[in-house]
Amino acid sequence: MEESAALAQLARRLEEVVNDLRGLPVDVERLVDSELVRQRISQAAASATELRAMQPVGQAGTERDERSTRRENLDALERGMRMRTIVHADMLDKPLLAARIRQLHAAGDLHRVVDEPIQQMVIFDRTVAFLRIVPVAHSPERW
Image (cartoon, rainbow, N blue to C red; front, side, top):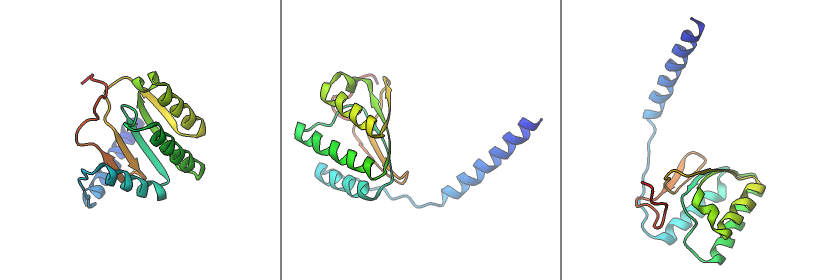
């Protein structure tokens, strides 16, 4: 009987929270310029205290770009940002990406590796999200 009362109380509280959230405004902006997307992500990252991300494949870019973004992530971790990242298992097959994951994990980015299809997404402070409208090219074809 006690468990039933606790569940009923939880259900009421969840209903209250959902009702509170229904009134929140949501802004959606579609960005098609990759450079503008990178700039907006950098702006959000500069002041964020938490990053949650899903990465189906490694970044399409040069090794120099990879080193630069890795350094930015390490700097963010050093200043106290909490990072939680889900990566696809295929990323571990690429030595440069696997080394990145190991280094970021050692610095505090907690990783979960999955073998199911995932879509690239980055969320800052649970309030600003970046996701692709079109799936990442060359992502694992397990849809």
